[in-house]
Image 1 (cartoon, rainbow, N blue to C red):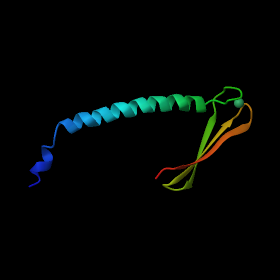
Image 2 (image 1 turned 90 degrees about the vertical axis):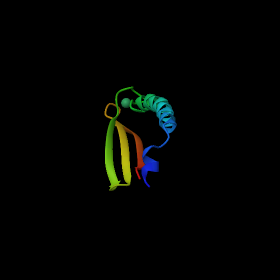
Image 3 (image 1 turned 180 degrees about the vertical axis):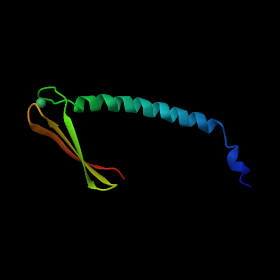
Image 4 (image 1 turned 30 degrees about the vertical axis):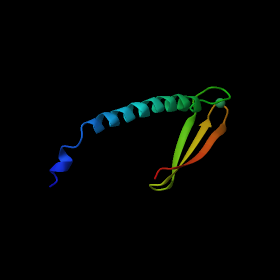
Amino acid sequence: MQDNFSDGPNNSKSAVQNNLKQLDLQFSKYEEVLSLLHNCSLCGSQLEFVYTIELPGSLIREEAKCNHCEIRIRDKLFNIQ
Ligand SMILES: [Zn+2]
């Protein structure tokens, strides 16, 4: 009875690949943005990131600071659920 599942349609595979391609494009854009965010907007040096677990398995705090300017650039909470 379960044989219907095993020879599923092949064309769904290429649909998945198309989706992956789009995701890849989005991701490279995301990486570009990230590289901008990884540098201090004042002096251009690389930021130091500190990650703290606020709630195990669900909430992470991201802090970014510039050691050169001695300022904290970012303080953000991420929900990873
Ligand atoms: Zn700086």
